[in-house]
Image (cartoon, rainbow, N blue to C red; front, side, top):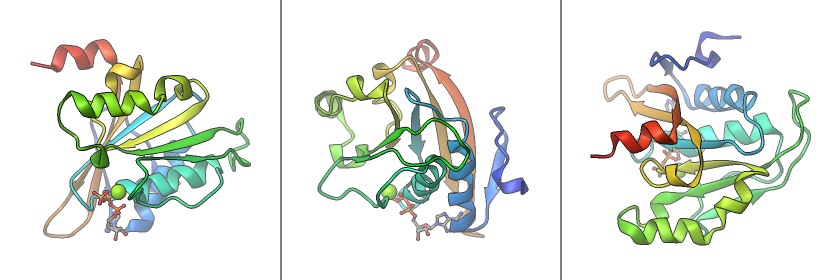
Length: 171
Ligand SMILES: Nc1ncnc2c1ncn2[C@@H]1O[C@H](COP(=O)(O)OP(=O)(O)OP(=O)(O)O)[C@@H](O)[C@H]1O
Ligand SMILES: [Mg+2]
């Protein structure tokens, strides 16, 4: 396993020099994901959130191509054969940016997707979801991607967040 695909949840950053490394990181992350898990991807425009989702999809072995949802805000990928031999699982890829991001209406729109229902049976990956989707589940994996302006490398940081902790952080 290369350094760039090791998983750390202790606040350490992993440097991702290329888009292929972003995908490889997602692939590796997928190996710890099971039905019911929520992954929240945060990072600025063009950070690599969709690229990482593509890697997660490959790691889960789901069907269909991952793209930036433009008109749809959530896309469902049917289960396939997991390369790690794990139980096949559906992937739901949500782009919360397209929800408008601000205010109660975004939460209402997310609720309208029935994510609650799907959460138990699927891995849900939300781009731009921090601060929005925490209330839909007990906990999630937070993935923060940062872009280094000098090198154009990305740096990623993983955290396991429990809803009670997230609620305490809200001012
Ligand atoms: N580690 C990396 N190093 C350099 N380029 C990368 C890296 N990861 C992804 N990229 C490139 O960054 C660009 C944007 O990636 P992507 O579309 O996944 O970002 P995004 O965060 O989903 O963007 P958006 O905010 O529009 O949803 C793509 O060209 C992708 O190949
Ligand atoms: Mg994207």
